[in-house]
Amino acid sequence: MSKHDEVLVLIRRIIRAADLRSKQLGKQTGLTAPQLLVLRTIGDSTTTTMSNVAQAISLSQATVTSIVDRLEKRGLVQRIRGQDDKRKMYVVMTEPGHIVLDSAPTPLQETFVERFDGLSDWEQHLILASLAKVADMMDASDLDASPLLEVGAVT
Image (cartoon, rainbow, N blue to C red; front, side, top):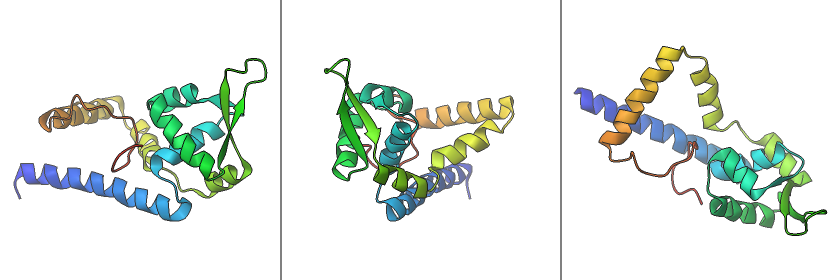
């Protein structure tokens, strides 16, 4: 097998791993990886705003709002108007949201981060440089992306 074929096989394995984990997550919780990430971020604090969630997970506020709309329809989160400032809207997790979150598998990016952080500094830089070059070679350098290992649209 040629070197470029080996690289393409490895890229495909990475995409497939993200796809398989996403399907597992969907079967177990009915949530997508971005929905779970938003739910986890909301669950990490007693009250938070959409802009705080968006900033914490590197997604646009519009995307987070869309995800929160879906989570709210399922009864997993709730919007609450601020007491001191009625213009502020907070989002909190409901009891069903806590139950779903407690039963959810670990997102693939969390496993990756744990393993990546365990690498030496030079290994991290090598991986980063190599992937940056691959992204550039695939005309993906300028694509907007968040640190979610999810296949498909993040909406």
